[in-house]
Picture 1 (cartoon, rainbow, N blue to C red):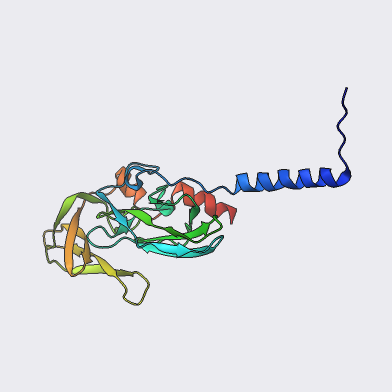
Picture 2: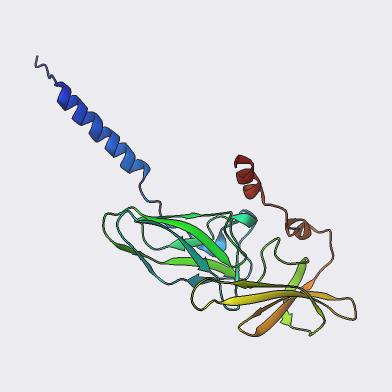
Amino acid sequence: MTTITMNAKGAVRLALRAAALGLVLMLLPEPAKADPCQTGAYEPIPDCVLQQQAPVNYKGWQTSGWAYYCTGDHPYFYGLQQGYIDSYTWDNSCFTVTEDIFVDGPNKLDVTITNWCLKEETITVTLGCSSKPPPGVASCTTVGGPVSDPGCPQSNVKNYCSRGPVPVCFQTYQETCANKTSYFCTMTFGVAYCLQCGSTGSQDQKRASGTLSPVLQALSARR
């Protein structure tokens, strides 16, 4: 019978290799997600289109924060604050992309990105963007599809802008007409469209009341 012996140095080398392998397995990049428009804790993102962002280069093992914005006639982003999970994707498996729930905005995805590969890589992120405001953004419960701006008196005007040398902005406001009909309106690139406000007390009203989603409540409790 043959007996195999191992000296102390060999045992240490084997232990180090096992530890390194375990670390690599833990840090392996996660795969990119499925269609961002079709994911969510409640239902698919309404009236959603995919908006591909500009590619960004990262050096090997580089980590950096980045902000991406929905623009145009679909300026709204549905993120973790509203309970929508994986409403973005990316094209390179060298990367992990982690959403920062406390820095997101109605039109913004804020993330921390890490390139786990040893050489420079490029990543392109795609957002699921909507023409309808996510829960908690609209000043009323909206019903039906978009209509032209009725031109009634405005209130609750808010502006949302992207960062950068040339900010891209959109504006929201509520209009109340003489017949007591109210609208929640969005103006982007000088063109406005509105959604009629419905009756209060519905399930949608409870979700759009501005309270934290269950995901955000859970994360806030840990802080």
